[in-house]
Image 1 (spheres, one colour):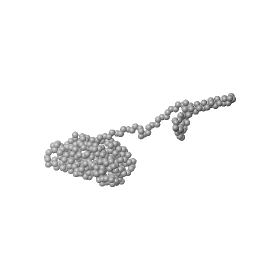
Image 2 (cartoon, one colour):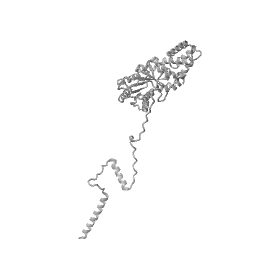
Image 3 (spheres, one colour):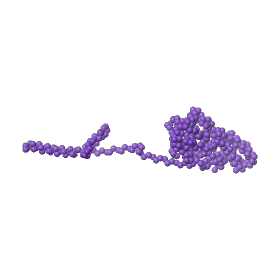
Image 4 (cartoon, one colour):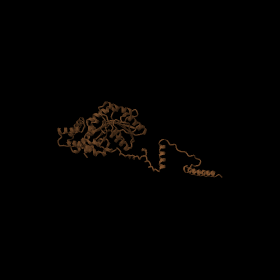
Length: 394
């Protein structure tokens, strides 16, 4: 064999052997029956792959990227607040009588001391009348009470402490007693919930009273839906949602400045859908001198009545406003037919005589009284407990 041909064969064998070695080293194994496919890489992904290839070739060690924070919905959520279990409303007035006595005892004890004095002359009777007027009982009612007491004391001829107390108790009860019922109508009728509108001027405690009333009803085993129709004050909606959240009462709200009547309508609709017992609607604080705002309040009531009847219109009055509260009651009564009074801040004033004034002049009964800032300090008004407490001074 030609030596040149032999050398060429040897070189070819060597080249084939070396080429096969490198082919085996660089080719990835492919499972039988499957073709190797490469993922499509575009944009940033392809750039990242190129960087990784260069780093692998140069022996560079990359720091792994920081882990992205988990999505917001996967983050740990705060625990739902535990629902409170309010006490039932029955007996609240009795439980709060000590607080009532502290605020009203100066009025009651002052009258008892004057009536028990040895000399009930004209000056003494005038002082008794002034004491009654100062307590916001009103001139007409004060004059009638004094006239009745003078007659009875003259006929009886004696003024022992217990006898005087009995006389004064009977006269005060006669002024407070009314033929109108004091029960707040909260019972559903048919497939419709009872609807309560809460009205009043700013600063009387209207939203707080709404929340406390809802709490009392939940304590009595009722289901309640709240309507935040005071859309002109963002804090009112937030405040009402806090009250509702504590006892599990849903609150219907809308954005600030929304139509209050639409909120009231939606709240009633929600109450019907949920099969709730009572819907309580907190309306915007109205200045009774603003005709346009008062007309809007009338609109809220008319819109609600397209869905169902309004069972109660509770006017919230501040016990410290005195005669101004009576003027408020008159105007609200003309617009929305007030059915009851919720008298707040009675614990901080000796002017509980406004109860007599409102009932005498408007024929509207006081149904609820606020006797403190605690969540359970709203109580159904009981005339006998009220009078007995202010005369006991306990």
